[in-house]
Image 1 (cartoon, protein in one colour):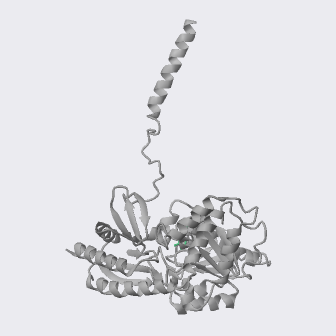
Image 2 (cartoon, helix red, strand yellow):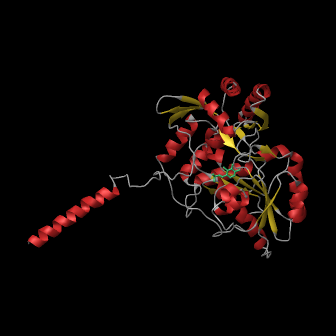
Image 3 (cartoon, helix red, strand yellow):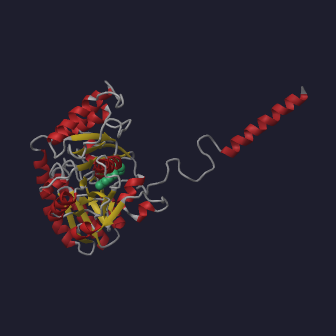
Amino acid sequence: MAALIFFRFVMFKALILGRFLAGPKGAKPVSISAVMPTYARTDLVFERGQGAMLYTEDGRSFLDFGAGIAVSALGHAHPHLVAALKAQAEKLWHTSNLYRVAGQEKLAARLVANSFADTAFFCNSGAEAMECAIKMARRYHQAQGAKDKYRVITARGAFHGRTLATISAGGQEKHLDGFAPRVDGFDQVPFGNLNETRAAITPQTAAVVVEPIQGEGGVVPADPQYMQGLRAMADEYGLMLIFDEVQTGFGRTGKLFAHEWSGIAPDIMALAKGLGGGFPVGACIASEKAAKFMTPGTHGSTFGGNPLAMAAANAVMDVMLEPRFLEHVNAVAADLWSKLTPVVAKHNRVFECIRGKGLMIGLKCKVPNGDVLARFLNQGLLAVGAGDNVIRLLPPLIITDAEVDAAVGMIDRAAASLAA
Ligand SMILES: *Cc1c(COP(=O)(O)O)cnc(C)c1O
């Protein structure tokens, strides 16, 4: 009996000691944050948004010229999007792709009616849309017997996502570091260089991928002749031409899709960011020819195109397909460019140049872009950094002339404070 009591006592102590070693509940003796620290985050917590404005928990407000990296294309809390998502949330969230999904059929028909494409696959992110594009290009050739056609030519400075295949496609050392071996099958050439692209083509080449405007790479537009040259080259060599419009798509440049400015079309296109207006959704759309071998069982996604995502994306399309929508984007973009260009020129010790298209604007900086972003923040303006020491302005497409004036004023004052 005494032995049992003693045993219980020891076990009790062990329990206490164990608790002590583990620390209080929820605070294990580790220094890593509970949210895996893969991002260098700005110390702001937003509580709500309205249009182009974001509000923090402690009552500060910011003009959002980052739009969650070109995602919140219709701003925050857009009434039509809120109503559509609420209505869907009360009916049905998810069924899987074991069944037909009415929202997919509606959205696919609209994408087909408003682009070069004949068919759409739905996924949840930009990287997944790119994975589908790469798989489709390989399968197009391999299903026809060209078993060794798998290589894809990509552009230096590109960004296609953070999966194993897409970091290899992007080819940026900072994204590949520590994740060897690279996924095989990607050959990089300088962005904008048709001769080097042609020289990189081998009998194993299946496809060429470009962003019509490199986003993460620093807002670097492809010129129309380059885009047209890529189309001609893809036709000449029987390659699939893939455009990554994850960032440039859905009205960002003033056309529904940025490649429309160059008058040519790809065979396959990856879409995401603006499509859901903040709800995670992606799409890979393609011509019938390109998608001919994407038969049942060849590709899939549990969540892809679920009813909630489709409700959000269809609500975005309701707004973007309104006849005057792109007119507004082009008008407000023209206003922003005309007011911002002299401000950039005036602060020529801070800014080197302004580039981009529509509401996808890059300010190349002469001082570290992080310092400039910090000054923007002090003024109450949110923007996004990019490669090549660039700041991206990616405002919601619904911004007003008054918000343009406010942003230009903040940029002017931020640059002046930096020069002082
Ligand atoms: C953001 C982006 C991606 C990746 O999208 P995720 O949703 O983060 O996977 C791919 N390509 C381009 C051009 C992008 O801008």
